[in-house]
Length: 269
Image (cartoon, rainbow, N blue to C red):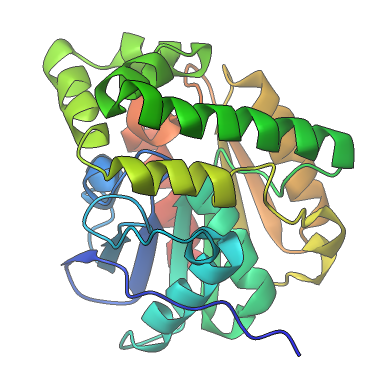
């Protein structure tokens, strides 16, 4: 009999009071990276987490604790201990994938989901294998070249061009410093075990996820607009919001409108 993934205690930053909202960052992020969104969700008890390998959370040497299944167990334990649960979950990119995995395995702790630039994985086995290989190569580069160079190369990817254009110099520099504060080995292990290629695809299971879900994406992020439409078409209780003029990091590129859409969703549930 296969044992359940081992849950780790995740570092959190808590603010405010009211119904609990657990906010989950993306790869190379942290609770601090989600502050522009978290600060706009007043009236709720906001719990921003550092995922395993990121921020102040543990960075174990073995890979199993980094899987989305293990992350879901950690989030479930966090939610079960929250007062006034079940909890709303807001997840960005990798955090959105973790929130979907949680809603599949522990719907009882989920009051609602807000998924920002998220996916349910790669359905094609060949694409998953290619992505796993690419993520493994990226993980190796962290060890070979160091975290500073890796972060510089990461934020030079086209998906971040719209974010760079929307932030001023101080904001951009602060985002770079935040990304460089995680544990290099933790980020490498996260790539290997929690990348999209390592994720068990959930597309055929979305119809069974009855948690009220908001899907948010930026119109300039064409890939995730297509993905967002597919998510919203398959999740039985969902709404899609596409924000003009924003790209992948829509919560940072247009935090006011992104937060307004999420607040409306939270207030409704």
